[in-house]
Amino acid sequence: MDEGMKQQGLNLVEHVGQLVMPGDEFSMPQDLSKLILGPGLKLITDRRSTWEEGGVGTILACKPGVLAKVKGNTFFVEVKSKQYDSYKKDDVLGVIKQKGKGDQYTCDVGTKERAHLSKFAFEGATKRFRPDLQVGDVIYGKVVELPPDFPMELTCVHGTGKSLGLGVLESGHVFQIPVHFTRLLRSASDSVNVLRKIGRIVPCETAVGVNGLIWVKAKNAVLTILVCQLITKLSQSSVAEHEQILKQFRKGISSLAM
Image 1 (cartoon, rainbow, N blue to C red):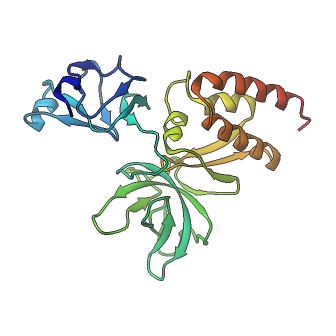
Image 2: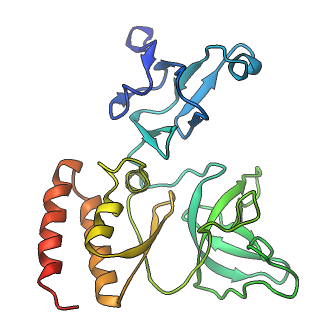
Image 3: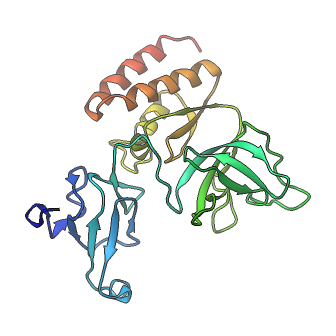
């Protein structure tokens, strides 16, 4: 990359929503606790302890895209990609494809390789009491390991041993959306999180995987499908069009006798 094109000393917070290129450098924010860097960003320091002791490091952009922020202080580069690139700690939706003879299931999470899920990777699971999943069942899990040359490992519990929303997803409807749009759906900002806005119109449960799969369950099948169609339409529209689309949806729902 041309050194003259590289930007240095950028403000991470103020640059959210703007285009970044590989090689762009951001100064380490001094007022952010528990900073998490997601896909497309990495931390550079002379010594790892420098940052831990309060020193100043540099954050480097590794991919071209739009700088985004979700869930408090998690920053990443949003790349409009149809393919999911897996990272540890990602929340993903998976479809059970095979019940292994051993202690694990094989899941499809949208990558070239299938993922493995231990039959004990559920809250309270024991040898006698554990979910008996069938082919086609859908789970909401977290990536815990990405061993080279082996399938990724999933779990349906957090480090505390609690599921906290992870696990088997009963009924509802699962469909695919662009990978980059899942980041917007998971945004911590009320101004851009369309799922919260949809929930004020039609109460529903949702689970969004960063691998481009989303699960929706409303009061009945009709409302579930309508919400799924709405999310698909939003994923194909610009953010500037979202409010008008939601307004039309609210008007249509109010005319239904459910």
